[in-house]
Amino acid sequence: MAAATTLLTLDEYHRCYATENGYEYWFGEAVRKSVPTLLHSILQIILGEFLYRMGYVSASELDLRIDPNWEPRPDVCAMLTPQHPYPTRPVAVVAEILSPDDPMSKVFEKCRRYKHIGIGQIFVFDPEAHVGWEWSSATENLERIHILELGNGSKMDLAEVWNELAVRATLQSS
Image 1: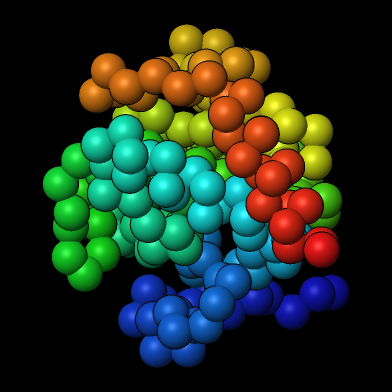
Image 2: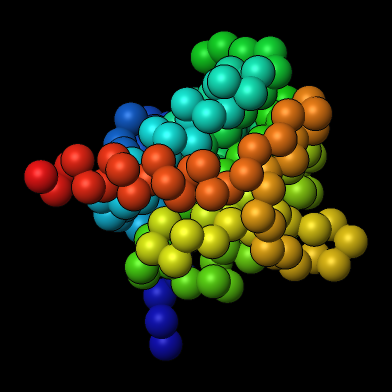
């Protein structure tokens, strides 16, 4: 018989893990995020910069303290008005960047939960395959996109993102 897992309270999580990189609070558990690759990290910076240029306050690895049972730390989030020190109301955009060891079932669960807490737009990017998706509430599925169309009316062809990623990844390997 397996021993019962002791769940962490949110206060315990904040005390033990909130200052640690790579953890999120999922319903009483400290869950480790996948370790980012170089392409993942570069794409995180690029998306943050592009979102900023498109009129948003952008941040990476920022705790969303909206739901007391779930505190995700999206790879990139963006809001029209900053919330200090942590967002306690839904932000406009979150972006998750896939790492090679990310199970898609976890990505889908995270997208559903983001929608549940009121996030306006949810994007997932694969830096290896140069593919982007947006979460559809209607189909409860990721739908492939080629143009990033944001709630504030800004638009950008994802080819710009992938070109910038290729340039920076090449510079990093020189």
